[in-house]
Image (cartoon, rainbow, N blue to C red; front, side, top):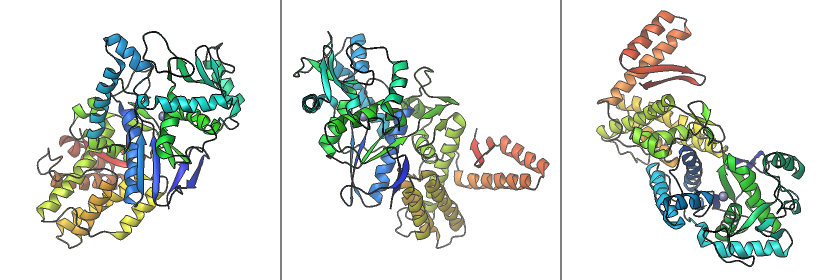
Length: 464
Ligand SMILES: [Zn+2]
């Protein structure tokens, strides 16, 4: 039984879907006006991995992710380039799709575009105005946030606690009754695309898009809503408030992935240190699979540090998987042998059922790789079982294993084993305080272009 950390309750809870055997999942998608960066990749991959795992567990998953194809950034870019908003959105959606495909991220089953659902959004807002949960002003329609009793539930804050924070940040807006209120509908400004509404021409706010499209496609009380933890407030808090104010049952579980650090600093607009997916892919052909491995080796709720050393280490992991596959194929084994190490599969399932424990799950995959390599060396009949298990469990998490891949170092498999033996010998020397020997081994490895690093979670090595 899957347990996950639910943002709303703040606890690890048992996941019981609305309909047995089915999971409805809504994950916030991109606003398409620029290259996707690694933060987009982490978000999309988190829910890709969750979906793949749930499907492997036998659930029928309905995965919806929106595309925001109208917003201030798209309008600004269109104006700067003298093009239409839809030209900009279509171009950057294609770039986004190509980047995600290169990362083996499955397409969601439904990808609603905001501009296709404006009529439904207008109906939603009309309902909120009719029940006095929303009010009309000169510049749009606003949600009366204090009409939603548990508005701050996702961030575990009261109205007043949130107002203190908002009051400090937001300028006083005379159109609003309360600083916490937010726009459901924005009255038309000149030069912007607009849609008709009972309150005049205008366009929807961002939060009403996701609230409308998730309920339209997945229905009331859908199972799981996900996104990056930067979306908890205000975006998800506001989506939820709209649904609650309309008397609808919104998502029953909430899951949020943590952010990224690039070279020791938080990836952010102010630091302008975004790394795009394309930059990473251009650097090394293995980086797409390596990024996935790196993400898997860090729990989704932990901040992930990305730097050249961890990417190099992740590429080594991918090479190790590919090398095992090469060796297995050379020994005449099929990679999809149905033979399984049931104990490893059980432990993998247990790890994943505990809030998608991918670091433990990947450790089990590499344990199978080690067993497989040894069994292949010994020409043992156990090899097929270990190879089959390693490949299947890697595939469950979306990690492709390619017998022809990652062999840029010739006889890579043999080389890797020799290096691992040396790294292990160095660790043993250190443990027995034979530092001269440990240093000598490190120097020998360095001469072969191998960097050894001692980290809090153990010794790692990679090709410099
Ligand atoms: Zn959203």
